[in-house]
Image (cartoon, rainbow, N blue to C red; front, side):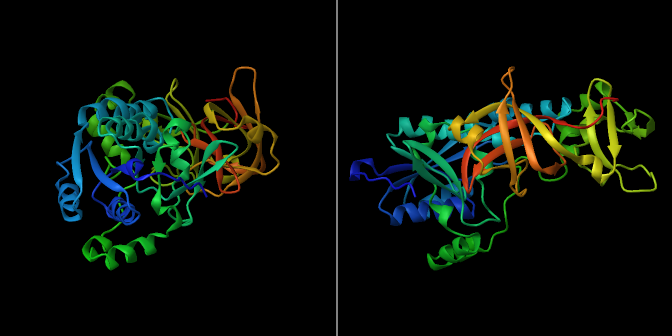
Length: 360
């Protein structure tokens, strides 16, 4: 485990405070460990986050609110919409962490003279060969290491993740013991903080021009034969089965999306499988480990099982990933995160899968 030794002057930490279970527990744990805790709440969506301010008062800590609503819309929400308009399946948390959340935390930490930043992510850190690695949290169901692969070494060296060795149930018990029973009983937060329901409804509300600019298109099979009409390619994702509203007499899945032709390829579950994929825009902590390890695994979406794989770099700079066992529902735009054991050794964005015909 990565353990820092520090004097009292260095024990000043800025905590990203949402007002939820995890950030509240993070503040309390760090206080117990002797840190001088300051809370920062990023107001990115919806109503002003008054609950976090009240919690900070209860804990006796300084608290600030950063009104980042406009920037969040321009950077994170715009990217989310644009990705669907390109036929990709985005993960906004992967984009938000380096470009927004941890960047803002670091900037405010500098202004407030805080040596460290902390969040309520369920993940850990380890140091090997003078490099800091993200490590999966002890709670397999809550582990959030997948979302953090884009963070650089300069940021990781300032991070504290006190929840990494706890399960969610233990965190709830901890809050009860500390007198925060009502907080401990709260439900889970949404996976995408700015979407309450179906992402398709969000696209229609915040990018209504999609229906006019894209419009209906065709479902096709792997040979290019038209199967029926769809509502527009941005409303579909790779691997989707429900909500297709087409009767083919057998289960059908989205295999591929072609934005240029506004076509969506359908097929059976077997056709979703692939032995290879291409990935791009990588962040590899140690290329030797990624390209040379016989213990490498990859996760191709959050909570997916790690798949043994090998990786090599192509002449165009992209990564060619070979799965030792076939992977299914590989969605461009999602992240491919590489692990050795529980340690994150790098990540990349999925560009395409190999093995599906090019008829659409």
